Length: 118
Image (cartoon, rainbow, N blue to C red; front, side, top):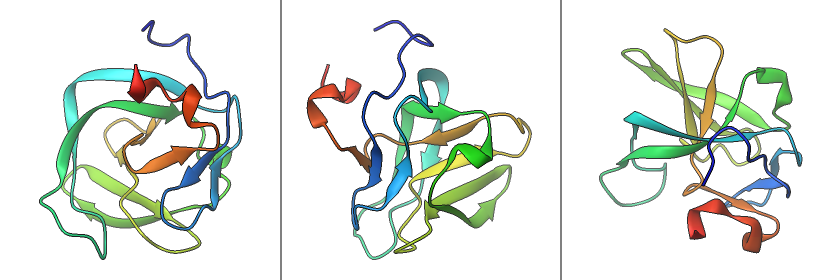
């Protein structure tokens, strides 16, 4: 899958409440080598996971409904602003230009267009 050329063709929604996180054509698919650790989601079991594939945006005003939750070291975590479940993504404070949204913690309105499936 060609990185940087793929944008979301469907609405990106909160996996838990369905609230719109990003409108179509606002996020770019990106794979990163180092990965970003995401703690377990609030009110969910698990240990969390390190993600290497993300929807990314470079302008925080691209989001429809997102809030910031805990900051740990260099990472500020993102949560759904409506149900406050998170983290759904992260923002590295050392890189002020990119916001990362985990495709494993949100859903596309049209799941057939989800690059995670490929």
